[in-house]
Image (tube, rainbow, N blue to C red; front, side, top):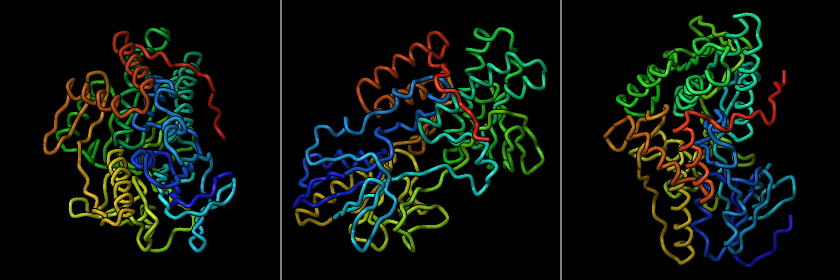
Length: 425
């Protein structure tokens, strides 16, 4: 794979998400060779994937080339490949483009969609964990509205205009709000022969409230905002099956729909070769200590969503969101530099900067410490935070321009079917 030999310690990083790029950024001037492996050549700002899927943003607004992020780093190498296996005896990673030895291994592979073993739902529903998947959802939504416009029967038309989302976490809530606003702002102007009332958005959640990880006040505010947008929220409802046309729940409800989006859970994306007691079967996450070391290994680390770190404050591990990943990456980089200078490593302490979710125009909820608030202020705060953490000045400018345009004109400029979605079955 054409990685030069070196006398410096070699750090292999698997995954270019929030944790991986935070770790590498903080090793810019370190005396080490860093090799990053990722199946894609770009970093994805996942919190805004739902805006790509609902035609609010183009994908290049939330994606940034990995090589460009680290182009000023010396002794950095990127290879566009996944890691198939970690040989612990040889201390090397095996990839489709060759094998590479390491002195330190950092696993930051994140999560993948969890279908909980339901093959039918996996085969027919639409997940949203990557840019291609978000584009598939965008194309399917627009294609189905086009099909509804030429449907000859009311039953067929409603099936194409019925949108069902499973999972009322931040992703599900934000998707439901964005689709509902699409109905309000776009349908009347672009499809005058379609009635706004014919388009329905259903949000199905197994727990007793939306945004369960947030404070009850935020959940109530989000529920109220969704109701004002016309979203039908179904709580204490578990999806049982989906055959491509009908969603069936465990309590006997059915939804006729050609658009079923699965946002009901994630599971870790571990690497083959590091298993056993270090890998928690239930969550598919690596158990790590306060120094991010994988249980049983001194020079193998796990960061972000794939890492399960128990603390007194977080006995079930840190939340699988961006901030713990960013902070763990920065902390591990500092610890490694300290250890190379003969100093002791410090345990990781997570600083919770708050949790937020947007529901729609001037509608958002935010938890900071014990305080919870919503409305327009929370919405502007949500926009500021997401613009701040976007990678790249251009992406910030383009995203801000799109948001301003959408806000003023009640429009979504990216509603293009560039790559038509074709179901596998």
